[in-house]
Length: 143
Image 1 (cartoon, rainbow, N blue to C red):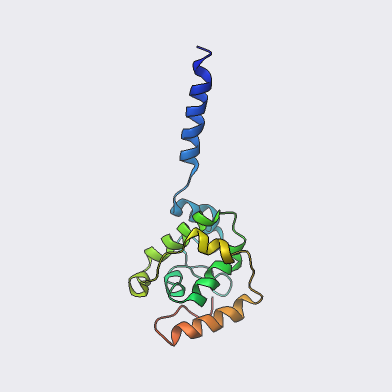
Image 2: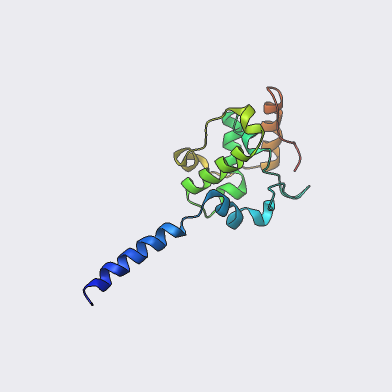
């Protein structure tokens, strides 16, 4: 019986490891919901809404860069692939996703820029939203 114990332990560890991987919805709940809320609508004047915004930002390279470098994404404990999955999940939930036809975020794309902080988040948001508004639907300038 002692001979089977290491194999059983390895199988148990492997199954626990697989079950420990959260879905994007679970990752949102664990890492984002505390600030952005259960419905991803944020807190007016303090925390930006993610609902209805992520897909719109994904339309342009500058918008994508902004989303990956905001403090919540740049400082997230999530690995690059899981952060990409959460952002893509948020975008897919929005009606704006059908209009944006943007390609999904990739782990490699996020790894390239996320750890370069924005020097001025609000000013960058205003610039990016203005650029988006000039070519179609855009998120709100304000939180």
